[in-house]
Image (cartoon, rainbow, N blue to C red):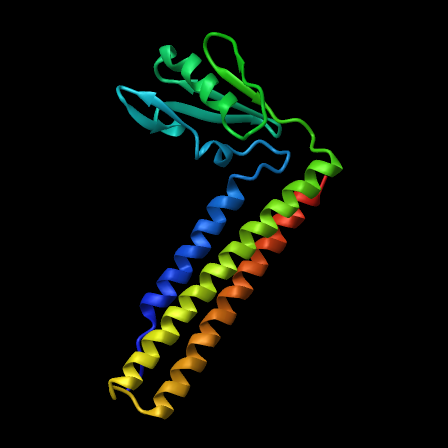
Length: 184
């Protein structure tokens, strides 16, 4: 009997998706609408993502323009951006909000690189925890005599291979993000 690890694979894929979202929120000196994904404003009594109340465009490499569908939201959007961890002061002209991304300093680039390394390490720890859950599952199957000792060894090796493959994916995503951060 072979052990089904689809659920553990899905959990590792979810961890990788979460890592990609974290990486997307780290600004790399270029205007990227993804940095606004975590910002919400109150709209008709509920917290709504910014892209749900406004059009976001990038006229050039360093500027984002946020054009709310309801101009009454301009001040709320401006306040939400100021209180976020973006570190950019929004410019409100009464119709749209402009975000001008400054060129990153070398020191800021290094800080951001440390931050993305931490995100990657957190993802690896989460994946190791998923592997541990899988190992516990396999041991339980063996204890209940649902699988043989050979099946257990093979299942543990398969789990380790799944982890190794996903750790490589995390390392590749980290390398790509670090390259993006360090390029001028």
